[in-house]
Length: 147
Ligand SMILES: Nc1ncnc2c1ncn2[C@@H]1O[C@H](COP(=O)(O)OP(=O)(O)OP(=O)(O)O)[C@@H](O)[C@H]1O
Ligand SMILES: [Mg+2]
Image 1 (cartoon, rainbow, N blue to C red):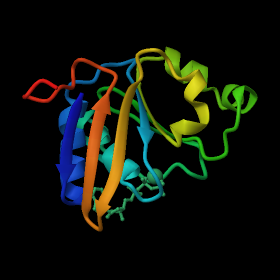
Image 2: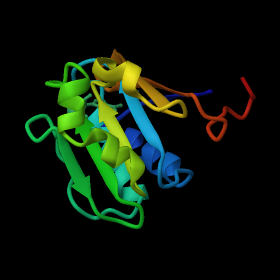
Image 3: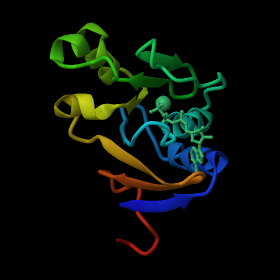
């Protein structure tokens, strides 16, 4: 488990960029965190770290935005997804099978369909500009103190 505090949107992006450096094609990131927590901001950092140059925006209306890079990034918002049929119809399982990283907002809506090796990133709002970020589910991301 890796836990840290971010004091600005920029710090969140920088942290995500470092995490991206340890990601590989096939990795799935599921966000846990309420409205405005910073999930899209985190994904912006991931995109930079994966070598995707395009500007990252919220996929709420598109359901999925794809960014080409050294490792492609598929950024999902599962706001309107409510079960297997809708998930299947957006091609979710095909995205999982390709050589890309998938980052999923509102992953709470599809918990039962997430792969076993999913990396969970929980972002909690502490204060206006302060977020506590917790990464679980993968040994690559551990605190120096080893908890
Ligand atoms: N430490 C921080 N890390 C990330 N964002 C922060 C931080 N402090 C303040 N913010 C602000 O919080 C907002 C985060 O917005 P963002 O769209 O990334 O959240 P989200 O979790 O994707 O929201 P939504 O649920 O609406 O998709 C931005 O306005 C950003 O400037
Ligand atoms: Mg968002």
